[in-house]
Length: 101
Image (cartoon, rainbow, N blue to C red; front, side, top):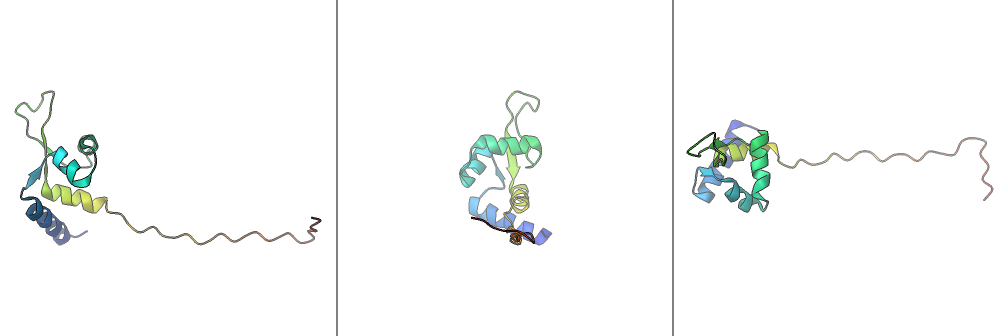
């Protein structure tokens, strides 16, 4: 993934949404998932975000995700084609084998 590709995707997102930062519920609505999943990605470090709450060490964080970080996350988790494994060959019957039935 090139830097140009990342910036292009970030600009497309920003133009479509009209914002440079998004909240987890906005991202969840955009992708059709629950906001708890987005927050879990943020807490695990997979998705970068800032805590914009007045009290950063408080009980309830207010996460904001930059559009460029969201574009990077999308590129990293992009579905890739699965390589088909070759078919397994059937084992032949051993020599001297007699089939009775």
